[in-house]
Length: 220
Image (cartoon, rainbow, N blue to C red; front, side, top):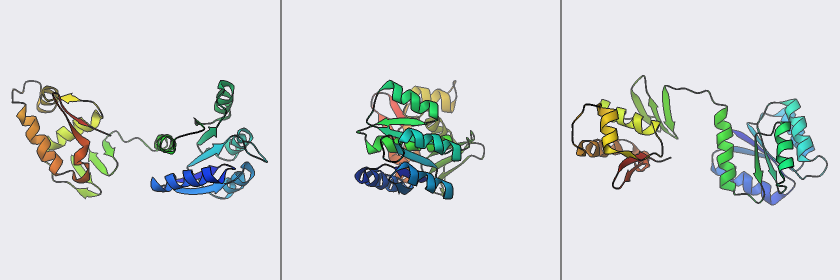
């Protein structure tokens, strides 16, 4: 479980960010100023720091400079100051991302997720979406840890959909790319396989969306 350190002198902001972190499956810790944050970073491991700029005792920029001396943890800066100079200065100090106040907690969570994903090793032989995983070389599919019983063509179809997320794919494209360029089957062949594929994907079945008049897409 990823650990997030929330550093802000405003308690209500810390509480909101903490609540959203926990809702997204992260463990959250708090510090009300830069000095407290540095002490915590010396004794505990964190995967990301959400850091306010305007704080007493030690401002966010100075805190970020010290953080980077202690460890290489990613830092997301929060600030009501939106001047370009402030952002550039922050990036020069090693800030990984910059979110302007007032901010959307959902957007902040999305940015945290992106940063956490950057640190994960990339396995090009595995396709994943949450608890849905496809071992491309091993030709196996698991749904929330349970192996799904898919036919070879259903696996091919799922691999193609997952490799082109959020893109509307026509039935003709799917026929050519999954069944082969010279395949002259009917469009309903795709419909039939999509129907069978959905039956085996549990709660992820709704991710395969019908695009009326076109075909299908895997929506993330």
